[in-house]
Image (cartoon, rainbow, N blue to C red; front, side):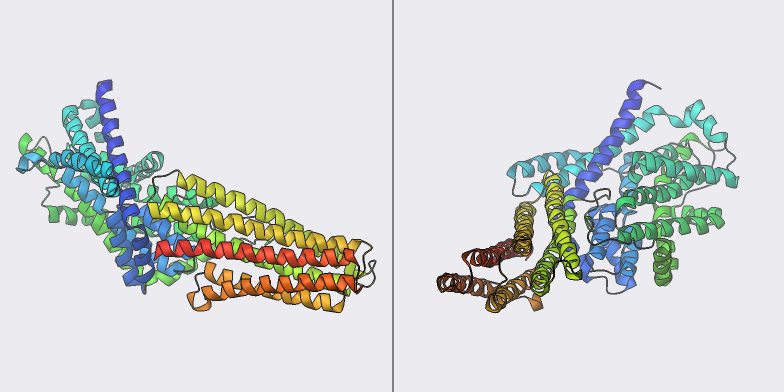
Length: 587
C-alpha cells in the first residue's frame, strides 16, 4: 500500500470529521437560542423528551452538543435529571442520521444517474459567497461543512475502491483469521470499536472506516456490526472522562448515557445473529453470499448494500434500546444518583459550580454556564453584605473586647476577608473563561452578551470591594480608641444598609430570571432613595459635629460607611443595566 494512499485515506477522514464539526457548529450558531428554548419547553414527559433529543440531535448532527445543552439545563434547574436522561436517549436515535448520510454519500453512484459529489462543489461555491456577505455567514459555514463532509465521503469511497481491499491478501487474511461464528470474535471487535472511537474522538470517523471495509467486501458484516456496537460505548467513555472534572449532575448525565449504551450492547449480544439477519432482510442483503461462491459483480453489488445494513442496524438498535429503557427512567435516575454522590462543598472555599472547563461544549452553550456562574457570584455578594451588617451589630454589642464577642467579631471579619479574596478569584476565572469562549466564531448577539457579562462580573467584584472596605472601616473603629456611634447613627446606618440590601435583592431577582419578582423601576427608585438619604445624612453629620454630639473622627468613620453603601448601590445599578442588555439580546 502506497504512503500516498494512506495519506489520502487519512485526509479524507479528516475532511469528513471537519465537515461534520463545521456543519454542527454552524447550525448551533444559527439556532442556538431556539434550540435551548425547544429543550426547555418540549420535555414535559419522557416521550416528548425523547422526541426532543432526537429532533435536536438530527438538526445539529451532534449528540455531544445535545448532551451538553441538556446538562447545562439540569445545572440551571430548567430540567430534572430524569428529563435529561430521556433527552439523551433521543439524542442516541438522532445521531444515527449521520450513518444514513454516510451510507448515501458512499453508495455506488453508478447505480444512480446523480453523483452526490456534485453537491459538495455547489455547497463550496454558494457557501463562500454567503460567508463573504457576512450577514448570512453561518448559512455559508453550514453549506461549506456539507461540502467538506460529502467531499470527504466521496474521496474516502474512491480511495477504498482504488485500494481494492477485497483482493488484498493481507487484509482478507487478517479478517479470515477470526472465527466468524465465535462469540469471542464479536467481543474482540466490539472492544476494538470502542478503543478506536476513544482514540480518534469521533464515532463518525469509525463508522466511515467500518462502512469502507464492509462495502468493499473486506470485512464480514457480523464483525462490522460489532465495531458499530463498540463505537456506541467508546463515544460514552469520552464524555465520561471529560465529565470527571465537571459537577455532580454533569457526571450523572454522562453516566446515564453510558448505562443506556452498555445495557443495549449487553442485551443485543444475546440475539446478535437473529437481529442482524432481520436487519439484512429489510435491506435485501444476502448474508450467505461469499466471494468464492458468486459472480464478482453480484458479490460487489451485494457488498455495496452493507452501508445501508450498518445504518439500518444503528437506527433499529437505538430505537429498540430506547423503547425498552424509556419505561425505567426513574430507576435509571436513582441508579446514577446512587453511584455518584454529591460532593460536600465548603461555601467559603473558592470553586466554580457551573463552569466545567474539562467538559465538552460549544461556545454558544458556554455562555449559558457563565450566566449561571455569575448568578452564583451575585448571590455570594449579597451574603457578604449580610456579614458586614452582622459585623456592625457585633461592634455595637461588644462591651468587653476580651470577652466571647471579640472572638466572634474577629472570626466574622476573617470570613469577610476570605469572601473578598473569593470575589477577586471569581472575577478572574469567569473573565478568563469568557475570554476563551470569545476566541471562537460567535454570533453578534453572543458577542454582545459576553461584553455585558464581563461588565457584570467587574461590577460584582466592585460590590465585594465595597463590602470589604466597610468591614475594614468597622474593624478600624472597633480596634481604635474612637467613641461608639450614637443610637441615631446606628439607626441611620441600619436604615441605609436595609435600602442597600433591598437593592441587592432586586438585583438577584433579575439575575435569577425571576421575572415575577423583579421590577426594573424598583431598582432605580431604591437607588434614588439611597442617594437622597446619603445627602441628607451628610448635611446632618456636619451639623452634629458642629454641635459636638460626637467627634469629627467618629463622624468621618460614620460617613465612610454611608458613602460605601451609596457606591455599592451604584454598582448594583450597573449590574442591572448590563443584565438588562443581555435580556434584550435573548428576547
